[in-house]
View (cartoon, one colour):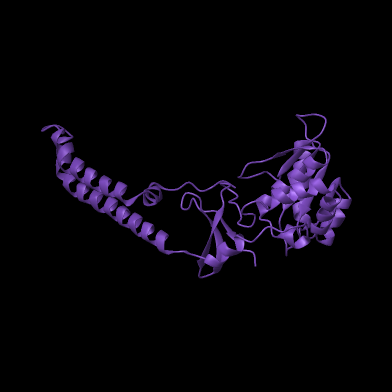
Length: 276
């Protein structure tokens, strides 16, 4: 679904307040004094001079009000929402020393996706991950023989406490048909509903839940397990990435509870519910 286009007033409110204030002064001076100087003394346009004075005040008040709203927006942006320091502390948890289901489920969604790509590279595939933004139902493309035609497409979903339903698996099948790819793989840190498992079994889609994917990682040679462990838990592996920008998000508190917000706000208004 496309984004609604902002109106001119909304765009101005999103800019620094000094911009609208400058427009207010410039429009007042231009309409009140500069424009009348170019009007002829006779003819049909000569009568416009009497209407310009009221218009200059309207322009001054309009742009002045937008400047005031932009200033208020700037002040509110700095005051609310308040950061949640405890969430930042949680994101700086120490890296685990070995693979476990809890360790796997501590990964933020993007790191989990990249880990899945690294796993398939470790077993012999060439993987291609998509940049941040709408992915069209594809997180990873796997190649083995033909470098231009993927052998399989992979969808990753870091849902720990929520089951993946049949809707998500049907969507993956639809993408497979559209991309003319014969195999699909769905990975989640949680589990699947019974309908999702049945639909996957009836179609060329492999469904891997958290324990199953963890088992595949543990089946790798020890040096490859260690390499994946070092990659997955390097740096900040818990703070989620913005799905639109790809940058790390910032924890906030609001009246409705804690949430993650993009550091590029207000240019990017992507938010993410904070996992309990």
